[in-house]
Length: 441
View 1 (cartoon, rainbow, N blue to C red):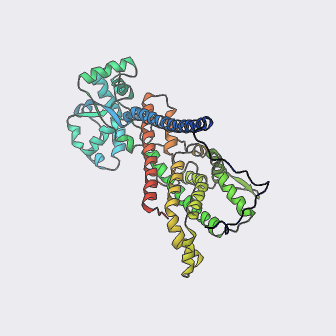
View 2: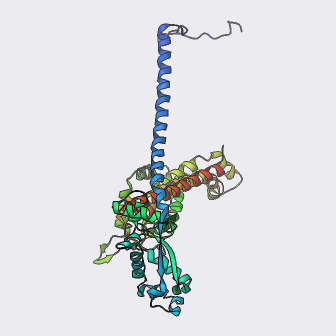
């Protein structure tokens, strides 16, 4: 190119002076480069240290819980013999075939008969070797086969917590010695504690189970999802697609963002005031609107808590859909509502579901708001519906952790394992949905 056609660039005092090429071999430049590389190595070291520290805490938690919790899924059984002809329970075959068989056997003194048989077989204080609920297993065996009342039968019934701890070299020395003696005689055995997964709360750590709290959690999560998901998604669609851009919309957006960071116990106080409180309106007392300790109240309270999370996640997912999708739909004659529900929402649904499930996992692990609305009651039967008194897994763990009996320590760890498995399953579902339906633009 000829120099005659190249325009002359005007120069002035305001323009920077021409810089000389950088000399990378100078001592000062080499020092700066070494300092830069050292900073990068420090950053990588601290990042790796943070990952290792987090993994160590997680491994410590899991190892501790598994080491203590696996015992909660097992139990010690002790063999006792029942000489039914000698005991002569005052029950008839007709009573055992009737629906009132449980009441008849309880009234016949079966519980005392089982304790007496244990005392006779193991000596004075032998009734302390068996669980308080050991007679229930004998009762179920009699109901299944009433003919056993005519002979001597050997049962493997749950051992007491003291004997159970004694088999692990724990508890009182007296019961450790008794456990060693019974083990040497072949009267002790260890089996899977299926009762832990099917029973509810109890004062006896041998008889407690997690099913009542697990069912309460499922009912509570169902209410939370049914309320929070549609309201949160519709709110996000309105704010992102239809709401005018003015100060009121900005105020609503800021309020939603702030609500997502409010401590959960505040939502518990809100649920307590709104759903379980009472007001004086025109001299008439109104409320409480809903029954206390019910899964319905717990679900509504948790729905208020996770709704801001769902709104924020849904807005981000809707915002991530390219504008060309909307333009193309409008170009072929779709109405605005068809654009949203036929094109934008299906494409944003993976992100919406991921955010919703993560919010549900947070709600599943919450304890504070549920304590305030009374879901910490002692529940011996699982809830039958949304309005029945219920408790949830985190609250059940909190209650068991407050018990002084060593047997409840193992049950607490076992319940934590169940809760962690539940949370991992929900997070795994979120990852699966995201990978399966995710669309890359």
